[in-house]
Length: 184
Image (cartoon, rainbow, N blue to C red; front, side):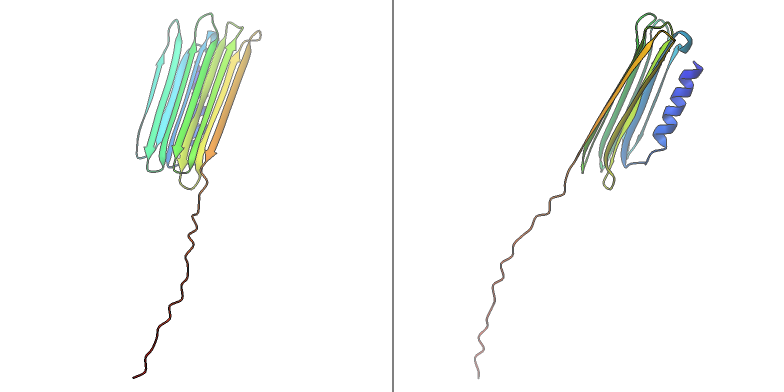
């Protein structure tokens, strides 16, 4: 469980060291079996309104979930992370992040699968945020750990769609005005 606590602590520290955005949400989840037995989750948000929740369960099946939503005048940001480890199947972790703001949107996903060994753990997490000056940002990370006979497959993807400002030009017609002055 010490490896899981270390992973969760490092994940939270990495997420909190980034640039604070006006509306942002970040989560992470990790679950393992064998020597890495246990589950841990983190969740946080920045914004005028929002929430952050975590849920972990250990036993025959270890699960972890983190959910965070941040909302303010610059937009909405959502982050969700899940992880599960069964006694004999693979350890799995997924993450989804999305932000929609005044100046665009960004989405990122991450997943990790650790299998083939008696000891396995999977971790996934990320964050999304938007501000009127920095624009939309979303990032994910995924990792895993197994014993010597296992393998880990981790993937991440992110995309950003920025709204370009449109300047409307208005043509004004200039009509000269002549005044007639009548002498008295």
